[in-house]
Image 1 (cartoon, rainbow, N blue to C red):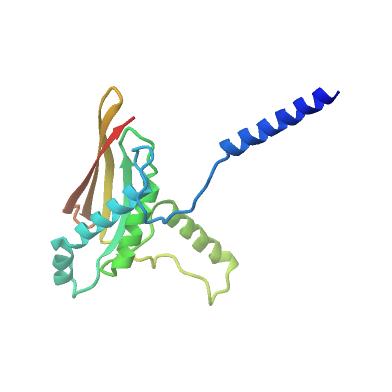
Image 2: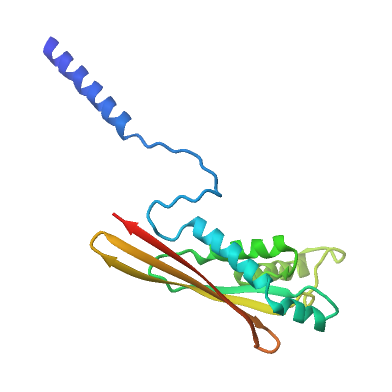
Amino acid sequence: MQIKKIALAAILATSGLFITSCGRQVTRVSTEETIDLSGRWNNSDSREVAQQMTRQVLDGAWIGNFQDDNNNKKPVVIVGMVYNKSHEHIDAETFVKDVEQSFIQSGRVRLVQGGKKRDELRGERADQQTNASASSMKQFGLEQGADFMLQGSINSIVDSHKKKKVVYYQVNLELTNLQTNEVVWIGDKKIAKYVKN
């Protein structure tokens, strides 16, 4: 009986030690810090590419040209689809949101909502036609129309040999005048990552 108790105690002690050694540790880090664990596209890539490409597009001659022709008014921009054509699953919505945020923070352009969020806004406006008071009801046909649409794609090339690989990402964006279909700006940003396992 004594031997069984000792054996049980030993098993419990060993289990506790095993659980403790396998316990996951989570440490909060700055979202601005670049941490590459897998070599895949990550939040740092999304943020850095969005910021750099937004600076590129805002430095383009198209803004000055538009303002010269329109009494110095700020151009209105809508961010359209950014297609993920890479070999990875990349949430392009995160990238689009980073671009939109950079546009607003710049103060140089005005941004209008697009896609499903615009549809939701129109649905709310439709609901107000019957459920809101006449004094607070928002009207149809008064949306701010965009002057330009930004569209793009995320592409990748992988070169690998044994346990080494180089992943090459290229993000392409282009800005088009919605009235004339004229492409007024094209830019790209490349990232290369060397991964050794």
